[in-house]
Image (tube, rainbow, N blue to C red; front, side, top):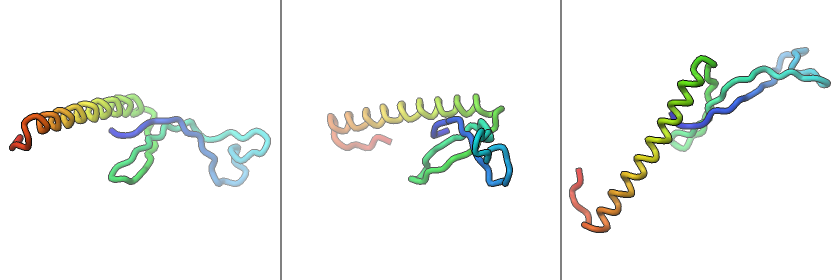
Length: 89
């Protein structure tokens, strides 16, 4: 899972809601929001509380994947510098 999680609090548009109070507003939340970018498009998702730990683990796994993938790319480029372009399927 790409992205990052953060805690969000919201105000709604409902007239006379506690979140609209001018003196002591009580926003709705907290909600866990996942922010991510895929195909150069940014987006967000609200994550259910029972899914937060799983999403955190998925984010951690994605970061590990990206790191390992970059190491593989660097090694491939190093081999190409040494040996030239070969069929490396």
